Amino acid sequence: MEAALARHPHAYRRRAYGLLAVALLGLVVLEYARHTVGWWPPVVFGAGPDLALLLGAGSGLARGQLHPRAVTLYNFLHRFWSPLALGVVAVAAGLSPVWTVGALAWALHVAIDRAVGYGLRTPDGFQRR
Image (cartoon, rainbow, N blue to C red; front, side, top):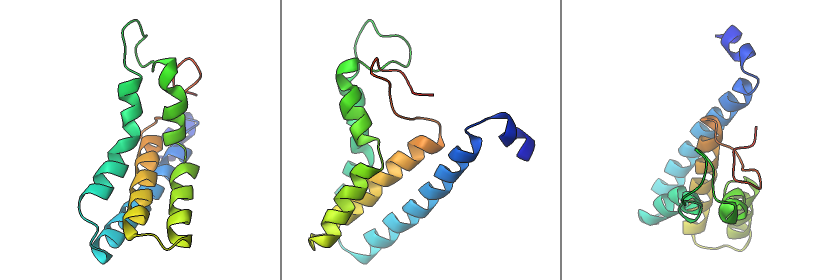
């Protein structure tokens, strides 16, 4: 197993993101069970970041390429500081637990993407390496 990880330079990072995703999933479940927030916050905030992919679809693109018009939004929605900022504001301002659960679900989405190898995009829409 260690030899396989050594051959792939990002394998340790992806494993760490996988562990982070498991921890975030636990927090989402815990906060969801602790508060009655309904089904929509984990679903909307968990799937919402990929709506940028719809904006980035189009003809004439190479395989795996996102249209450049969607790169800024995609990268914004797929950085950890975005859900972190939402979570900090939600807790500091005493907002509804809906926002905390949403921030955790959003962070979970980002962690899962990183764990499976998806990252941010270059200005021309390709995956950064």
